[in-house]
Amino acid sequence: MAFFPKPAAGSWTENWPELGTAPVNYNDSIDPEHYLLEQQAIFKKTWLKVGRIEQLPKRGSYFTREMPSAGPGTSVIIVKDVTKDNPDGVIRAFYNLCRHRGNKLVWSDFPGEEVSGVCRQFTCKYHAWRYGLNGDLTFVQQEGEFFDLDKNDYGLVTVRCEMWEGFIFINFDDDAAPLNEYLGDFAKGLEGYPFHEMTEHYGYRSEVNANWKLFIDAFTEFYHAPILHMKQAEKEEAEKLAKFGFEALAYDIKGDHSMVSSWGGMSPPKDINMVKPIEQILHSGLFGPWDRPDIKGILPDELPPAINPGRHKTWGTDSFEFFPNFTLLFWAPGWYLTYNYWPTAVDKHIFEADLYFVPPKNLRERLSQELAAVTFKEYAFQDANTLEATQTQIGTRVVTDFPLCDQEILLRHLHMTAHQYVDRFKSHGSANGKHTAAKDEAHV
Image (tube, rainbow, N blue to C red; front, side, top):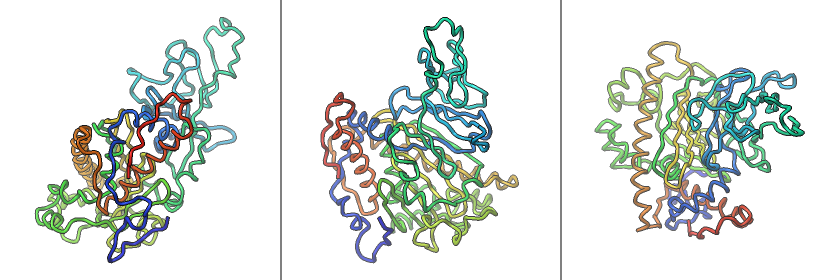
């Protein structure tokens, strides 16, 4: 769909009439049966971002990812190999499972924890079966004890793995469309952004007692910002926001994915008194360091076409929601962050946030980045705390349908898209009929 600037009179929602304007049903965030269907219909069928290329700097570099969103116990190894055909390296993914007796292949002290490192081959802790970086079974302890064992038949089970702009994605569905096709026009419009220059990394992870979609809901609207985050602004600025509210610059929807463009993130702020003393000293805050890094590709006339699509002079940030659970957020001062939401139960998920900056050249630049990172953490966990309160109340089912305003258009789109995946899965005779049909909720 095309980008629509907001008319002087009218609404964002009218540009996508298929989303409707009726109250949205939130049973999809509290129904355990629906959650199990989402595991099969969404998280085993779509492309999932699991890391960055910088995590695998050389041959044999690897990390594991626990993927309960795709089913209990699901674990994956991501590894870099170098071959004659791929001298620059190839990234592969495998199920983290030994072919002998099913032991988890790569883990340290605790089987459920993710690990990373460098190795020449993977060796099972249980009986020392060994596998090459390409997944081939290379060694079997006391091989002569087995009956007609052909090692070629017992390599690691592969998981589809593809790259986009240095981001590593996996997909458990061998029949899924290629990654670039799945990510679509938004991804194409972001190509060329200098991700490779922003390698200074800060990360947070937390278990949130709320359905995974509820946290995405929180980051796709600014309706809550003047209220929930009031304490993070100076008194005069907070009062102004509370009185007049906050309105984004643009929204767009393309297939399963969406974006919101907003003002803010100016560096430095027009009025230095709008921010806290420590921000004045370090030239940093929620919007990131004020001093733009000296690299190509971040000035307004250099940005890829998908970023700040309206080319607004007051633009500050764009947030892209790649379904199902990957948020990519750009800030005007020249840095970006990502969110991932990994469901572990109908009312729980793991929230991951990763911030990326150009490496600092001196101590002040480093401190300005650290201030941005801790300030962001405060904002994000304010949202998380609110969502846990939301989860407890919608779980009572006292009310199931909730009205959404014009600024909450991307919430409508998210819940509708998730329902469509589940509905298609059920219509194709899911799991050989093992699942009973979930209730057909009126979700929009």
